[in-house]
Length: 315
Ligand code: AMP
Image (cartoon, rainbow, N blue to C red; front, side, top):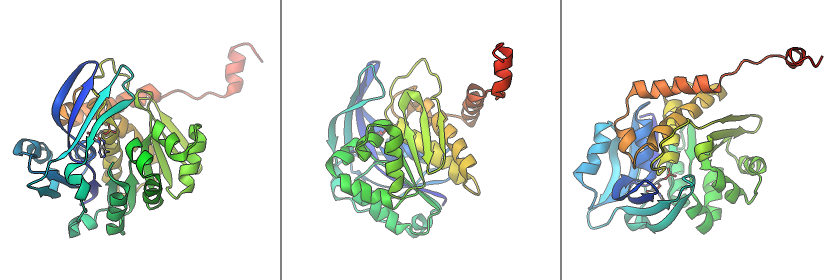
């Protein structure tokens, strides 16, 4: 198996200015795996309660995502998150977080999972992320996501988890909060000083940026007129990013830059409908079309400044 994800598998209740859902399939591992599954084989480590039914499992099965490492606690309830978005769809307001079966979760990886080439530590309690990291010591690349909930409640544990990974994928506000630094460039430098070789910052409708010690790469978001529900956009981005990396024989800066585009392409689909609805029925042709669209959108012809000045009559 090439790509492993540990994260929340959840029921979400979400309200946006365009509608609401009281109970839909969600969670970081869910959004991630559905997205990454378009690029590579994905295995999920997580936990659900007895209320997690056949209908929900069928979504994973339809996309051939391996859920044999998803533990089921018959007497327990699945993780539940309730959130609201106002007109600024970049900001999720958490109204309720019920850890439920996640409160006592101890991830147990099968031998096949331990042999994964790439690993994504999705948004869960950071000590659990570290436990998983320790079980996949041979992985070629490990990435981590987190959120304000953990940065606020257990900041040292988040930093501890970050020290053990190669790539951090978080959103703009979280990067600033984590580093305790309002300037994003300085925040990025600080986070990289803890050990990771790359930091990917998700910036909602403004796109995404990747920082390494020596390079900076930024892309816009795909321009969409209809955004319904941003829930899961971050994990869907990470799924496209990591899924594409896993599909490549070797990982270098050029591959990582293309992975950023695939991440953005996948996230752009996710926000068009509620929860997993849109990504669930996506096709490869649709993904490719938007990938090509990105290429056109960001292409420009570089000309020497002397020529520009000459054409403007300034030299
Ligand atoms: P995002 O991709 O950042 O929009 O994350 C969306 C998913 O994160 C939702 O489907 C929620 O179920 C999940 N989520 C929200 N809060 C937490 C938390 N504290 N721990 C783990 N997962 C969470």
